[in-house]
View 1 (spheres, one colour):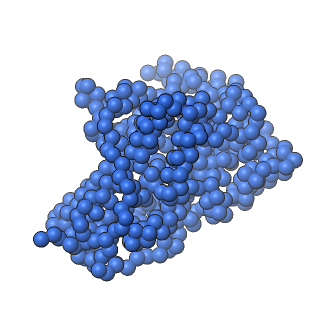
View 2 (cartoon, rainbow, N blue to C red):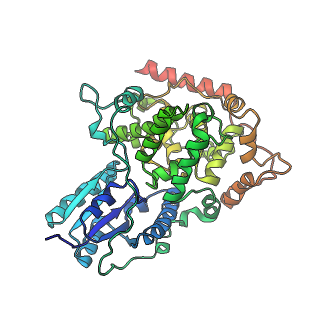
View 3 (cartoon, helix red, strand yellow):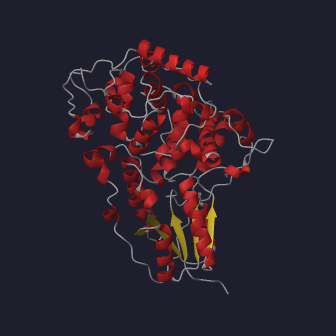
Length: 474
């Protein structure tokens, strides 16, 4: 006889109904499904913007679940303790969830799975956040890939799990467990007065993500490879936040991108490569979790980075370096919770090379400010630019922010969008920075532009000297 005791679908970074293996597994049991989100210490420790964006996603997903006859149950506390409580309250016999791959989540989930099995509760984790499980991709020698291009070649022709549609309905339990109110989690508290401004730039939920993918493939994909480095152009997919919170699956991006490539769309292959770059980041994090907190290349431990930050870090964070491209990017980050990829490279290079500040200081700021924060991508990106990571850009590749501005923002459109000072009628995006920034920063749109905090030649020469000293000391 079919076991009709409820199944708990433990929701994490998978706020979608389509292409969701954990949800599919829960539905396949034939039992009532209880969607449960637990605001546990790992989520409590998220930076201001990621936690805020997760809150927006949960609110939207609660509405989505109502559309299939279900509801989102919210609880707060230690994940194992909450699961045991809900299991006891509901008589559920199974818990199913999508895997996470960072070391803290792995440790938590392993402990939970062992405990639930000891209680004779079926505990099942599924894929869904990645195209390929990290342990299924290896070099011919059986090791982990450390360079992107061979990784791409190894996976580009592999089969990817097919797409699945949203269920028409989810079977509800006879009685729903009690749920906390999302507002009691205060997930927007650390955003202060910037919350409403950042929210205007968020694209929240599965339906909007799917619409955006359609728009990208129909209007942008053909010129993606040639236009993606120009931050003033609407050239990218803009799906990073939806991928980060699982509002769209990488599988859908892959299959739709592959179809576009087969149809002859010029930029489709490059788009697929970017999807796989994200996979590469997770592969590295899973195989070498230390990449999140320390130099991936240990020889960089002796490099003369400043780990204190001080006034130099503060000016970089506030968009007050005196260099247009850097400051525009830092303000875009503060207003939107996102930053164009080319701008991320420029700001990271300026911090780690011209200012000689440790990449961890930048990584931590991004982890607080990005609504599309992703632990693997953030760590790989910073270490790639700094030179301390796998397959990294060589340290002596020091981006000149003025040269990058002239090349990728030749008409100054991006800079004007985000820098108000010196403009007679600055756009609202530029003014919003001053509305979102803490009053304690003492910034004003009517102030004069700050002077450059360091000469580009001076900063470059200092960085190269430190690099040579590191090499000679080995």
